Length: 623
Picture 1 (tube, helix red, strand yellow):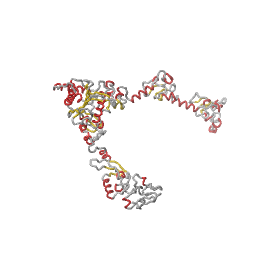
Picture 2 (cartoon, helix red, strand yellow; picture 1 turned 120 degrees about the vertical axis):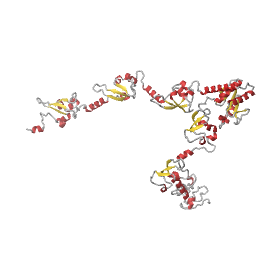
Picture 3 (cartoon, one colour; picture 1 turned 90 degrees about the vertical axis):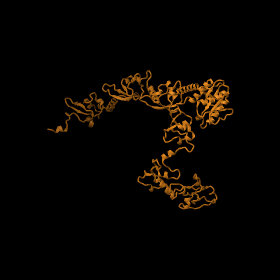
Picture 4 (cartoon, helix red, strand yellow; picture 1 turned 135 degrees about the vertical axis):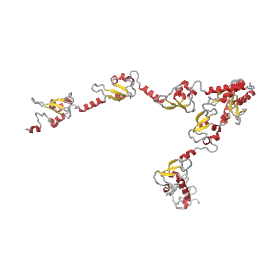
């Protein structure tokens, strides 16, 4: 197409179905009108593809990442090129085999729905041996890019190693120790990546079983029962054979801090003759991993640069350590301690140091001594965490850093993170904590700690208890509801403990519950007496508003209040509904009657007067 030209194409034409909009690069310029080259609309208009054409050039091309039109074709739910009839039929045939039901519109069949429908449907996987059912929208299953499918099949395919990427291909020695996968039982060494975090069961050469993630094993973690704090039974046997054949002292797991490095560990150290000889043993099962040769090279170069005398014995088949001036010694294959001890003897004889051949009895004695040394190494520290804190054995649940390793095989200062469970029957709280924080720092269950701190903060000091600050209120205390054994001497006046109280009034003695701080902070007391006082205050007249003040003549005729004889006319309202007994004030009149102050004070004080002096109309009309 020539730059600056354009064509007109109908949205329903075959050209539209086979093409899409071009980007403006090389098509538009400032000398010709800016139009959509496919759809033919001029500038300042909106193309039906949804792109705006601006006056400064074709903005529609830059509005899309790929500079293409979007035309949503009816029934296809795709962008760009329309699906052919064959492709649509293939999609429907694939979905028909997995369609179960329409959840959004029950009863609607798949053939009645458009492929772009947003209806949520139920599907059943058609893969052999699966049959998993799951809900998904139809439009997600019919899209051309990454259509959704069975989630269970995706999980089985997810992160599956490719050719040459599995544990069996990269670490066959580790794969031989694999026994079962606890996280995904169907996965084994052939279908696991070396850095997988699946929890698996392993068995070492000594027959020990333990649990560890595959990533931990790949990164160098081994059998917890065979961890001799930097030693191994192989090294113990070699050291005892060398010691018996040479008569020289041999130290195992000799540690040095070289300049610019962390602490380095050497398998064997012969201190005599001075300045001593360092020997590293490199069996294949620990030195054939990726990066092992680089680490061995760096460590050896640092030791030689520091002026140390270092030798390395490597298993046959391993490449030599590329360090200038370092002799290459081999032993094996395998980890037969006699073969490796003989390789050490070659080094000592070349240096003029004593060495002799051992008899079979001497070899047996040396190997027995090595086994005893190994048993001592794996038996645990001389002082274990259980020795320092015996209660840890009851609260220990699991070692999260080194699964299978218990507190009796860890020193008190160990940094392993463990799971603990409180031994108190009413608690049972579980938490994670580093071992040394429990064995040395004395930390325990945090929930019990919160309870102890709260109890300690709520206990009063000398002269601060309720009994000493407010003895009158303390005399009303019956018990503390949640702490039956507590008394007023165990409570602060501001405590929020729920207590049971007894009213001190002889005529009441009502028992009621209330928090202590409500009684001291709000000056609350017996609720029954409070209600009685409230009612009494509500019926008492205000100053100058009593029956005596407003109707003194009526007040002079009051004998008594029947329900409360102690009340007087000064304490009664004129509108009171209390029934009273009255006596006529006229001389010689024997009239006595009952009425309320309200009945008497009606009509200006003329209501319900003496029945003798003012008989009722009915009594006057009777003959």
